Image (cartoon, rainbow, N blue to C red; front, top):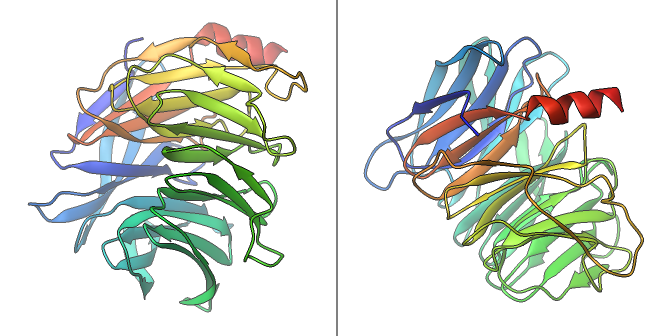
Length: 329
C-alpha cells in the first residue's frame, strides 16, 4: 500500500497517540533521542483521504526521553496526556494549541509504558513494577503497586472502565482485576517475551499480544489455553498492536521489520477449540527503521498512523473496499 502522508521529525521516536479533535485527524508524537532535546509534537492532517498534508500544530520541549504517551480526551475538547520517561511520569494538558504540565510523579526502574485506565487512574510500568496512580485534583498519588520481573508493558481495559490491567514480563502475561486483591493475578498466560498488549475495545475478555516470536495472537482470557486467532506476516519482532476502537475486527501490528500490517478477523470472538489463522489484508512497508508506535484516529475511524525510531511519521487509511464492506454490513 502507498502511504497517504508522511513527515520526518528528525528525532528518534518511540511513541504516539491520537487526539480528541473531532474536526481534523490529529496525533501526538513523543521523541526519545539520546543526543538531542526531546519534544512532544502535535501533528494535524489537513485535507481528505485522497489528498492531504501533515502539519505541525504545536511542539513542547521536555527533558529526557519519552518512552510512552497516552491521551485521555476530555469532554471540553482538550487533551490530557500522560508520558513516562527516565525517572518520571508526567500529566500534560493540551488545549488551544498550547501544552501545560499539570503534575509529575517519580518512578524507579527503566520506563516502559503509561496507559489511562479511566479519567481518574493511570497505570505506569517500569522494568520492576507497575504503579496505579490516582489523579487527584491535579496531583498524582500512588494507589497500588504490582511488583514484576523484567516488565515490558502494562495496558488497561478501557471497555471495562479500567477495571482490569494486563502486564507482560519476561515469562508471562498476567491479568489483574483492579477492584480486588492485587497480590495474585486473576488470569495468567504462559507467554515469553511479549512486548505489547491491547484489550479488545468491545469485549474485555479478548487480549491481543505481540512479541519476539513475530506472531500476533488474540487470547480469550476466559480460556487462556490456546489463542483464538493467530496472525503471521512479520519477519521479526512485533513491537505494537492496536485494535480499532470502533471496528474491533480490525487490528494493526508493527515491528522491527518496518512493516505495518492490517488484519481483519470477523470471527475474532469464535469459541472454537482451535486457533484461526489469518493473513494480512494490507501491508504498509513505508518505514526503514523499527516501528514503535501505532494509533487509530478518533476523528476518522479508518485512519491510522505509525512512527519509527528514525523519526518518520506515516499516515494511512484502511483500503476502500474493506471500509465499504464494513460500513455496508
